[in-house]
Length: 150
Image (cartoon, rainbow, N blue to C red; front, top):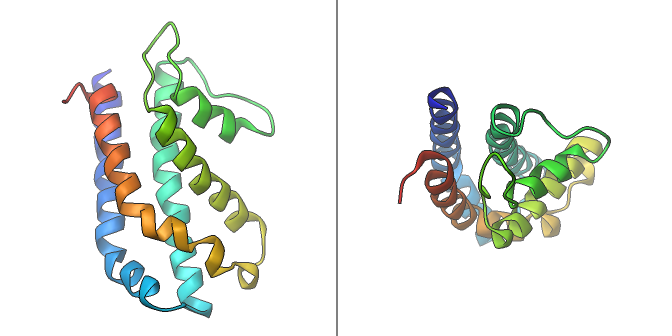
């Protein structure tokens, strides 16, 4: 469990750095309508954000749930499982947060499966607006459920 706590803490630190590093670009994007390379850069940040969250979920599933879900929808099943208690652990995140994170998962899937010129700002804007608030809630819930903090 100590190893898991260290890995979760490392990922939380990386996510904090990701948001801090790109905060200016994200705020600027909300002041106007970004184009081209800016949209691609913002998409990469949103993709990295969810990947960091999923890295935490993967570590929890491997160590506590004894494995990852399988099949074509395993990413969704992994997210869903984190909002549910099981015999080995309590719920990791709230149902409300799961719903919000689903939008980031959905964007990550889109980002990975379309040509970059097909990415649309209107599909990203809400995610950018809520990024820091979502991360703060995620960090608080993870610290409570996995690190034993209040």
